[in-house]
Length: 140
Image (cartoon, rainbow, N blue to C red; front, side, top):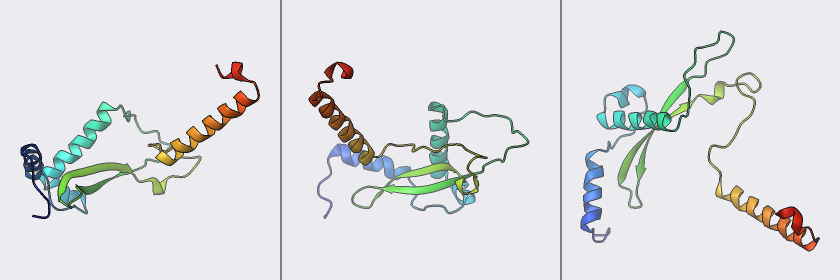
């Protein structure tokens, strides 16, 4: 009763998602391998790597350390607390990396909204200063 009224479309989407969602979050890979829904989520993650050309398989060089990976499993919920999706992420065990040996630089995979806003403020103030100094020709 507290959820309100479902439209046919919302009800259809809800029923489709509930049928293919696991209610538990596995702590170990063995638990996930025994659940068909988590296997689908893991396959989706690997397919995303292939679609985005995220990695390239290379032979191991003997002088470099191999960095392991780990599966992280999370249930995604909607506003009312219902589980709507199982999300599996394959992540690198970054805690065993050493700067200068395993990597040279780091970067943020996703730009934060705060950083984008700051960049826009800096760009707009630089443009205002350039116009007030009579440097319009340098901007174009």
